[in-house]
Every structure is written in structure tokens, then in C-alpha cells.
Image (cartoon, rainbow over all chains, first blue to last red; front, side, top):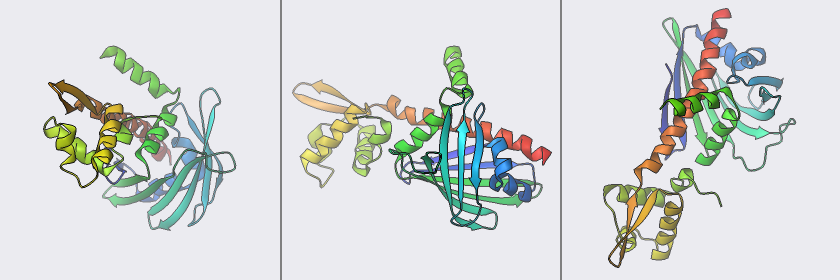
Length: 157
Length: 101
């Protein structure tokens, strides 16, 4: 069960989710490129890593590839890495990691902790401008399967 | 210039105006009395809120009253809901991956 809380004054979103796996595995899934590529893209989009260097100051450059081959590049800079926690600054970019004009960065704080046989992942997303958050979601949904689901919902409501 | 709900709430004065109007409809003068800013500055904020459709105008006699449009604020929740679906999908994929790991 996913929990999302918004704090519009701080321009933050808090996401909490439990996984039935030990923290070591969840950590690997969030920090190793070949694993990230398997889940990071919300269907039918696929995340495809170009470069990944998981360390403070390192970079994860990847593209989201859509069903028609459309690509959106993102550049993630790891600003801090700790024990089962890391911070990033993310921007939409080109294939060389050069930030796309018109988008402010999003700041991510990820931390995970083991709770008996589960791992709880906390994500805090902070934006300079809420409109950027809106744009980010709009891109994630572009022409996607989820859009189809939303339309179906509207149709059924 | 693009006007949307996110612009409406981006500014602390506008958030305060929304807070006032959520309690009761008010004239521009009555709104301005709650702030230290100039009336011009306040009426600019009201204008932006009106363009974002967060507030609506109603003429009563010679006075203009501004009303809070709750329906518009719901757009934020609708949008958060889309965000939730995106993450839900992503995390379900992570569940599958963790099982195979």
C-alpha cells in the first residue's frame, strides 16, 4: 500500500511504501542500473540507463523509452549517499545530461529501513516550483497506458 | 501566460487570500485590509486567482464580491491521484523484481 502526502507550502511530496524483502535487496534495486532498468519505467515506458555511477557527486543518466520509441532523458546527480539513504537532484535533460530548458530540478531524499521481514521506503520529493512537479507527472503519463486507464475511469464514472 | 492552480498557490499572499475567501465571500477592499501590501498589489493577486479560476466574481449592487471556487482546488487532488498511480505501477514492478532477486 502506497501512501502519498502533500505539503504544498514546503512544495514536497512524501511517499511511503513497504516491500516484502530485506533492506539489502531493496537497496540494490534502487541503486544498481541493471535492476533500476527493470522497474523504474512505469509501464509501458522502459527506463534505459546510459551511465550510472552511484557515489556522492556521481551521475545516473537514463532515458524513458515509450511504446512508440519516444525518449525522455533524465539526469540524476547523487548529492549524498549514506547507509540505506541517498539524496539526488534530478532534471529532465538531453542524452548528454544537459538540463532541458524550462524545467527546475527536483530534489529527492530516499531512505529505507528494515522492519521485521519488510523494508519501509520513505521518499521525499522537493520542488522549487510546484508547476515542475506537475510537468514531471504529465511527461510520465504522456501517451501511456495509464492515460488509457484514466480515460476508462472517466468513461465509467 | 499559462495560468493554473499551481500558480495560484505558489505565492504566500495568494494562499492567505484563498484562506480568507474559503471562510466567506469578500470585496477587494475587505481583502486588502488583511494585508500590509498596497491595494494594487492585492488586486493583482486577486486578478491572478481569478484567472486561475480559484476565485469567482459576483456583483451585488455596486460591490464586487469574490468567492472561493472549491472545485478548482480539487484539481490538485486529482493530479496527486495521477501521481499516485504512476508510483503504484512502478512499485508493483519493484515487488515483482524483489521476488526474483
